[in-house]
Amino acid sequence: MNAPAHPSRTLSYAEALREAMALALESDPNVVLMGEDIGVYGGAFQVTGDLIDRFGPDRVMDTPISELGGAGVAVGAALTGLRPIYEFQFSDFAALAMEQIVNQAAKMRFMLGGEASVPLVFRMPSGSGTGAAAQHSQSFEAWFGHVPGLKVVQPSTPYDAKGLLLAALADPDPVIIFEHKLLYKMKGDVPAGHYTIPIGKAEIRREGTDITIIAGAIMVHRALEAAETLAADGISAEVIDLRSVRPIDSATIIASVCKTGRALCVFEGVRTLGLGAEISALIAESDAFDYLEAPIMRLGGAEAPIPYNPDLERAAVPQVDGIERAVRKLVGGEV
Image 1 (cartoon, rainbow, N blue to C red):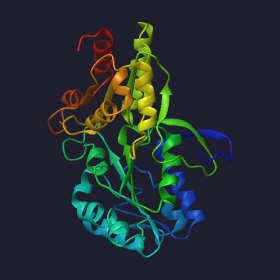
Image 2: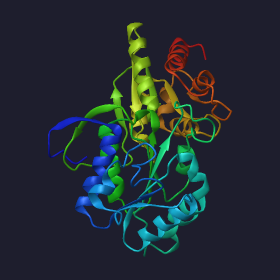
Image 3: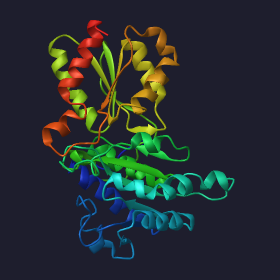
């Protein structure tokens, strides 16, 4: 990670993303922003804010209400030498642009023998918790993480949001940033200068000795809250923030599980064929398998669309109390 050039100050997650985009627009004339209602309106979650006033409509461009068309224009722009950032109003709507993301952006470098690249960033507001119901609350990290040619990241803090976005902009390949909607108002220390966080490097958010909890985005904070409660009962949980879904930092995960002997994968996406299955297989196929004192456990989303009812919505994805129960089962040998 590049050393920050300036002291930190407190920004929200959304403000950190906006600052990263502003820095990029100021320093590189090839950077452009594209998306639905990102201009005068400031974005569906007000992340782009006043950037159109600062940089003008030629750099901050509202696109028609067509995700397939907008994403296609962004891919084409990247192929001609621009470095677009395309914002989806909700990550769910990326389903309408799968052709451009999966069949075009992800494969161009390979199909053209490395003669062309697609330096493109897709920003995707993701996750549940806002009462937006089944078509606006999903978590598609595993979908896109399955595709060779794409990089997929999930910042969990304002610091990481800025650093990973700037790293994504410097990458020659398409990068998808999943921004959990519940994190936009979260505040944290963010340096004022330019810095990057390496894509593919996890962060140990809490040291522990009894169990490793691997999580991403909002689940990192729920895991940390659970770890605080568990510590009062003498259970020491190590919490790993994935930060990057593709590539996954297997070395950090394996080293941690070798130390603790237990692993719990916590993720918001649907449990079946989800991110936890990949991490579980990664652990099982590594040297960490010989250190396991309990089965690897996955804690993921329910096998159902996200409900509108707030109580059902909460029940559909892992919460702090569920993480605590899972850890107690693993540490207590009840599985």
